[in-house]
Length: 104
Image (cartoon, rainbow, N blue to C red; front, side, top):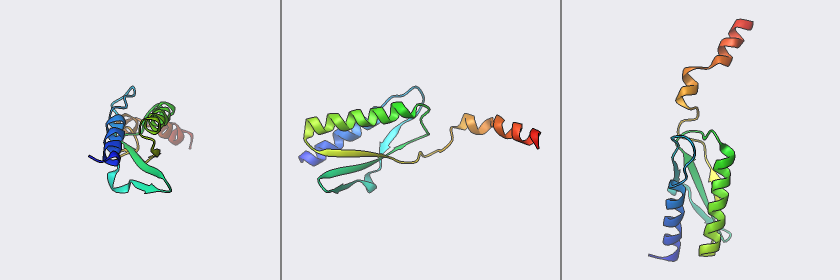
């Protein structure tokens, strides 16, 4: 396995192991990964929009930093829109719509 393949596999493993406080999973979009100007650009897609986006971004930044230190390869994770843009429980009860309808 080449260094770049090992780097990408390690990046994938770490991304897939991000755990937040909900049932959200993260994947790398392999078909959109680019290496350009001595940097790897890796799109990341969550299954649903994370509730704690700051934790999500902090996790991505920490993994980027670890990979740069361990492999000497510059990497930038690019958050992509989730597979499901609105968590199902939000779709089921949208109280703000009900309130808006009552006011009109």
